[in-house]
Length: 245
Ligand code: GDP
Image 1 (cartoon, rainbow, N blue to C red):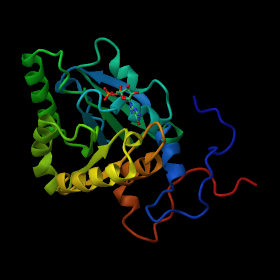
Image 2: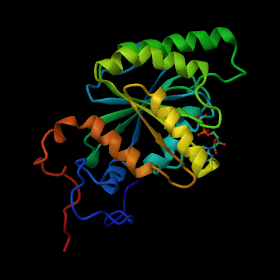
Image 3: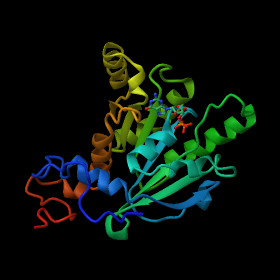
């Protein structure tokens, strides 16, 4: 699906970004996302050995829209919404030239009112197990609609991962649908979220306005390529040649 002859239409910044990759390069990397597999339970998850980033959030938080926007693929995460997959963990590979270097895990949305309590509890357990035991889990993005704030289940999830965050697991509280807030409301929500994120970080995101998309892509690349960030002298990652002339 990537048959574009030239560089990305977004103007790439000419010099390597301080973060090791430009936002345009990070978006190019994100665009390589491909569906890998769907796992109804933890034991069905493959041990692929690549750094994995989990996207979690209550249903309707904007998770599918975020993943589709981030990967610039209209239907990618809606694969997670097809019947039979809504209660599964869906994995997507990332990597340029079809060489996988990271994996995205789309965890089912929780808290959907119509789901029976028993099922909710069972799913909470699966999710907690995943977050606690998944060895190659490198980072967690918790999506939250700032108009509703963090729910009880969001808080539970945060508590579950807190020990791992203290040990270095990356964590981000992503405030979705930021276009629905005024600037003042957005700043206030962000300040609160930064406190709630504990050892992690908080960011604003709008799929509608494409706010924070490149920055999120850049951050996820950084999380999954810490070795390429270690030294300020590190050359930029392999990608399109700096000049095609
Ligand atoms: P999910 O259940 O977490 O996967 O949520 P969806 O991605 O399906 O989004 C839930 C609803 O929020 C849909 O109606 C989306 O169109 C809407 N939505 C998602 N992202 C945005 C956004 O950035 N801005 C606005 N205004 N609406 C959004």
